[in-house]
Structure formats: structure tokens, C-alpha cells
Length: 283
Image (tube, helix red, strand yellow):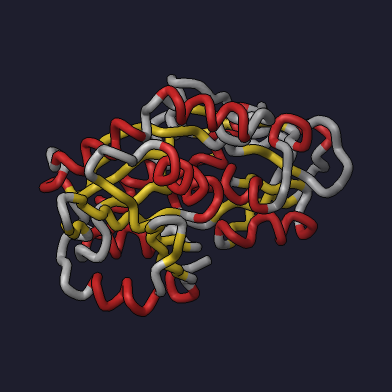
């Protein structure tokens, strides 16, 4: 979704219950950092996209925060713009949804000063089709490829097409766009849409390049359903990161959260919950 159509819900887990959105909104008005302290416990307001980020944070809240002096106020956000806007203006203390290339683009384009303090997981981007093809080379000449429309993810998608052998790109382009395609044997065309709409738009083209979180939403199995999948592992260029304001990178409470998001128990949870490698630990 675009930021103009953002859907945001806020919840804090307290003794198994949910605090009302209205109460949390009023509480947030008194904080410019997204951090609040009460009775020796610091609440961290953190924005995240629903799948798998909110699920991961909820598991951390339920299983790892006891006795640490922190708890999480998890804000579920359905777009890629609001989490950084809200972190930058102090509504949030952290966010968890983005990869290094997207963060760098946002800092450059928006003038933010945001930094990563932990790599958490990887969601491999994949090439998917509704045409019944079993191999990327079955994609028809002159066909249209649907891509995510934000520049960082457009570039990532084009790099995936290049890795699959469908196109070649100008190697000097840091953030390649369709103008940087140097070889296109199949004369493929490229159409960009909002990331949340790529899966729904897949029938409009020969194939679609779908981000991992949207593939999970669409109940796709990356290993079985994709024609071609990004490589995962610690060396991936695209780990999903815990991001904070630069001035807060040494905050003790946020560093505690970073440590929890690299806990071995979380690694086990991720590998058992997503055995199809839709989500892969990045630590």
C-alpha cells in the first residue's frame, strides 16, 4: 500500500491482554522517543509489517522479554513509508520491516538519519507466475514482468531477473532501473505497482517479482511455487533489520531488544515456523 492508504493498528501485550488503540494513542502523545518507563520496565514502541515481522516480535514479547526490563508496544503497519516517518518523528522508538538497500534509499531521499542495530531474518524475493510455467525460460518473448514500484525493490527485482539469466544490467548502476538494462533477449517489458499489489497484479503479466512478506501473505511456498528464488543465508544483501534513530543506537533498552532478536531460541522459532524457507535467520 502507499502511505496514503496506510493501515495501522497498535497493541501492547500486558498479562495476556490488549490495551485499546485509543489509550495507546493518548500515551504516545506524551512521548517523543517511542520509549516510556513505568515501574522499572521500559516499553519500546516498535512499528512492523504484519507478516512475518509482527509475528516475530509477538513471539519475542511472549517468550524472551520476561526479566529483561523491557516490553514491546507492537504497531502493525501495512505499508513501507509510515514506519520510517513515524520513527523519524519520534512516534516510534524502532521499526522492523526493511532491508539495507531500502534504508539507504530512504535516508537519502527523505533526509532521515536512521541506522540498523541488528540483522534479524531474510525473506527471499522470488519470481512467480500464474501461467503454469516450471522454468523462467518459459516466460514468453515480449511478456510483461510485474515489479514493486519503490526504487530499492525495483532494483532488487531487476537484479533477481539478471541472476535468473533473463536480462543483463549495467554493473555500474548502484540502484538499477529499467533504463539500466543492457541486454534483454526476450524483449521483456516492465510494469511497476505498489508492493502490496504485485501478487494481485500477477495475472496481468508473464511473471511477478514478489517480496517475501507479500508471498507469505499470499500463502505462497517460496521453495515450491517460485520459478527462481534469491539465495538466503548470512551473506545475503537483504537482511530485514531492527532500525532506530542514529542518536539512539547506543540506547541500552534498544540494545537489549537487538540482542533478543539475535537469540538462538528465536532462530529455532523461525526455522520451525517457516520450514519452506519463506523466512530464514540472518544471524
